Length: 356
Image 1 (cartoon, helix red, strand yellow):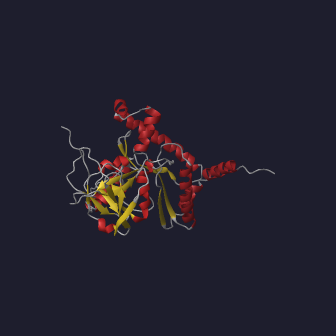
Image 2 (cartoon, helix red, strand yellow):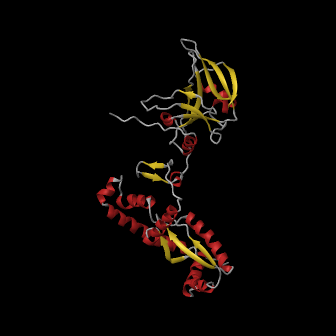
Image 3 (cartoon, rainbow, N blue to C red):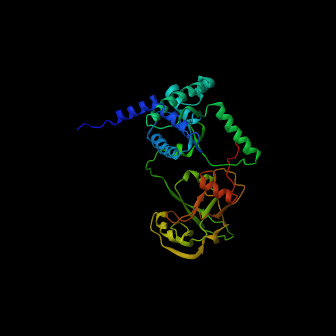
């Protein structure tokens, strides 16, 4: 039995479409119909088309073909993202073979920009042919390109309109920063690859401030980001969780007991905090909301500016009982969640002292 050669059949069909101007004739036939607008969310022209591009374009093509069959006059605008860091990084790697940003200055900024445009346009043509090979019907002859001045003028026009209507505002956000590229990075650029890693984690005690001379009371936190501890300004608890004050006998020269504050449901972590198994006694039970506002001593003293008090805050959106102690170390500026808690509670950010 003769086997059907699908690739050859596809080529035959596409050749027929081109010879008979099927796409153009279809567009003309639908001009009297109601308008339906489609503008492609542009892929970066950083290389050849991959399965993600194929899947994305195919699904969208199904929709606009369906609309065409319903009689709509479909506006089918192709588009390409040809600006920004992804293009620059590829040119640095494949063209300049550079290792740092200083080499771009040595090469010349204008020369580098020309190489980026050349690289982007070459890949645009290559990707166009690859996606057309899938049978995607778009206006490939007049796509929008982000390097086109008409596109840039349109973007600035939109920004100006937003400004005129007081829709723009200045604010601070936590972003990913690339030390090599020396610029901000989008979240997808950081999370594009996954792997299992073992994170270091530690338990840390923060001493509660009170008027008791024999004060030996601590709130216990657990963190997988110990490198952010110098920036700690608060500890977050859940207002509705049950917390306990636990007296633990510590074997030292003074035989002084410590009192730890942590979530009741996670009390077993005490066995992990001390090297030897300790006897402990629950002195008090309270809700997390009763801890709000308590002050504690800074966890670390590395010559940071301490012009404010460290305190316990409520953050039900962040604190869980899945692991840890139910008391979460907060370092605004060191993660989106920490920053949000910092803004909500008007927390300060620690700053290094100016060196003299």
